Structure formats: C-alpha cells, structure tokens
Image 1 (cartoon, rainbow, N blue to C red):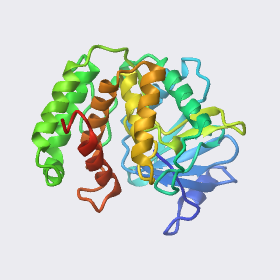
Image 2 (cartoon, rainbow, N blue to C red):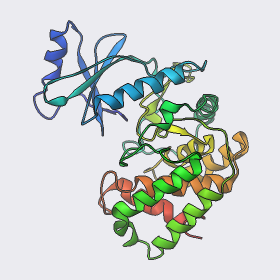
Image 3 (tube, rainbow, N blue to C red):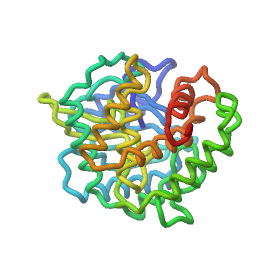
Length: 318
C-alpha cells in the first residue's frame, strides 16, 4: 500500500475510536493509498484498514513477509502481527512500525531536481542488492498482481512466460484505450510478448514491484533502514525486472522524469549487470500491465505515463 501523507479524513473517521476501544491510546491517521488507510497506534505498531482485501490474501502476504525476513538484510521489512475482520468484511492488519522516514516525497507531489543525489542512488542499489538476495518462494509465486484475477505464476514455470501471459490478459482488459493513442498497439504487444519469452532464464528472487521513494525509509544519515508496502506488484521473479521498474517509476511525474529513468536504467545495468535490452523489455511489460489501474484516458496521470513509456520504449515501439 503506497502511503501518501494524510492528516485529516474527508469524512468523520470511526477508526480512531475503534482502535481506542481496543486499548490503543495514541491513535493517529498517518496516510492513505489505493488499497486503504494507515493509522499509527503508538511507537511500535500501525494498523492498516484495507479496501476490499480478502482475509486469504492477508494470510498469503503474511507468509511472504515471513519468507523475506528469513534472509538477513541491511534494512527492515514488514511483519503482520495480527489481523481481524470487522463488520461489513473490512479487514484490518496490525503490523510492526518500521523505522526511519521516507527517502523523499513522491514525484506527484514534489518536483525533483535534475541531478540525482549520489546518496539516493547508493540507497537504491543497496535495496536492489538486498531484495535480489532473497530467494523466490511458493508464497511469492501465489501472489496476484493488482488488477489481475489470478496468481501471476499459475500454469507457468518461468517468470518471463508468466509475465508475457499477464501482458496478454492486461491488453485484453482495456487495450482499446491504449490503442487509441498508438496505432501500432497490437504489434507492440506482440513484440513485447516475444521479447519476454525469449529472455534467458534468470535467478528467481523476491520482487517488491513498487519501489517508489516513499516506500524506502532512511535514517538520519541517509542509510536505508526499511522497505515497506509490498503487495502492489509483489511476486517472485527476475531481479532485472525489479531494477527496470524502479528506474522507470522513481520519478514518474517530475520535469526531468524521462532523463532520470534513462540515467537510472544505465546505472542499474552497469552496477547490477543487467543487459539494457532486458531492462527495456521489462519496462514495456510494466507499462502494459498497469496502464488501466487508475483510469482509462489521458486525464489520469498514470495512464498518460504508461503511454509515454510505451512510445519511447525501444521494444514496444521498435
């Protein structure tokens, strides 16, 4: 759940009183995202009130968190301590509060300067190295990417083939909306799928899938101390996918976004050993599988971003 600062609810909020009834005396709404609202319950715990998340999904997420925690990492990751279902089927999870503060605000809220801070680049490399050291597990393979209706890995034994099938399902959902902005849409989808299937086998590791700046916390010295909000695109897969997506989404909306994506893509290719062509394939796949999650025309910022990504992508628009 990507969290945006949110000091006040737009309507009377019943949750602080409910949490107080459970014995929590320092309840504060701290943010909201696509999937729900987050409350601080004091120094060591938060509560997440989910929008439409079934209990079975949380059990799976809890196992994924436990799988990640088995690997020693230089930063903390989430831990679900308890979960309960309230009236109306509303699910609430109680989680360990993670340390640190957001590395920076999201680019939808603040324009990033042209020069990427070296410390931020180093932080990203540390996080990417760390996650790439966590083996992919059965629980991770059972995760469903947001917007889809089935576990990504179902009926597949290769991440690349599973992602190609997801591209096909996503293009079928609302592809006409994208096709209205790019006449060669069908051919671009086919090129992307062929390119995905032709990628060589790679290590299967934990994929966060949404490493935007607010989802990385740092300490006072700028060192990464926590990675949070798994679930949007969390799965097991090729660590090159994580690097490709992170380069693309780090600055999505700022005045230098295109330059930052190109710069981070080059940095990750050089430092992590991922072929640039592989990163381009995965960036096209990400745009093709998330374009319709928030809107279906260019009035939606994410939809516009996906259109721009695909128009510039050397695989999709070859």
